[in-house]
Every structure is written in structure tokens, then in C-alpha cells.
Image 1: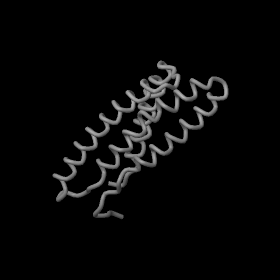
Image 2: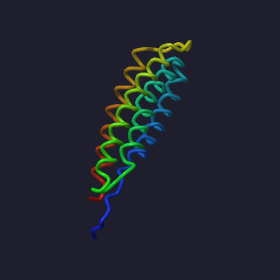
Image 3: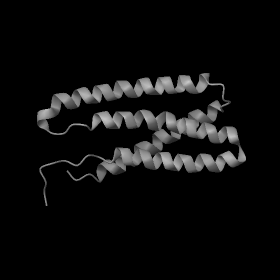
Image 4: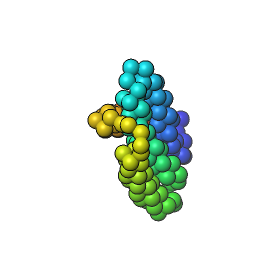
Length: 128
């Protein structure tokens, strides 16, 4: 059965899944090495929060008539995502809390890769 509307991709649901997975992993690691556990959660959040902001802005509008609004929303979402990422890294590394820099960057990179894979899967399941 065909529909006249396109479903929104479940990007925010994917970000929630990634956040929960990161939380579980960071709690497990925190029991062994507390600084690493904190660093894993910080690195994952440095990806998840800006990406969620982008997803909120990028998928607000739908339809051909809203193409101008869609383009503006994508631009605002992308700029906001970069600003949140920059401010997030600045806050993490200027805070008095001890971090493992390598673990923060590794967790960010792994969250980025895993998030991209999960988002691709979610988008491929959207009914067009």
C-alpha cells in the first residue's frame, strides 16, 4: 500500500539506542577504570548530543512546498551541530575533571562510526 507522505527517519531513536549502549559500556568500564568510564561517556555524548540537535532541525519539515524551509533547517542544524561539538570538546578539556584524552577521542570515533551504521540501517527501513 502506498502513502502520500514520507515517514521521518528514526534518527532520534537511534541516538537514544546509542546513548543507552554507551551508558552500559561506560558503567562496565567504570568499575575497572573510573577515568576511562567517564571518558567513554564524555566521548559518546560529544557525538550524540550535537547529532541529535541536527536530527531535530533537519527533519522538522517535509514535502516539496517546504523545500526552502528544509534547506534552511539543514543549514541551521549543521551549523549548530558543529558549534555544539566545538563547545563540547572545549568544555570537556577545560574542566577540572581528569580525562583520558585518547579514550575520549576513541569513544567519539566509535560513536560516530556506530551511529552512522545505525542511521543507515534506520533510513533504509523508512517507507518511501
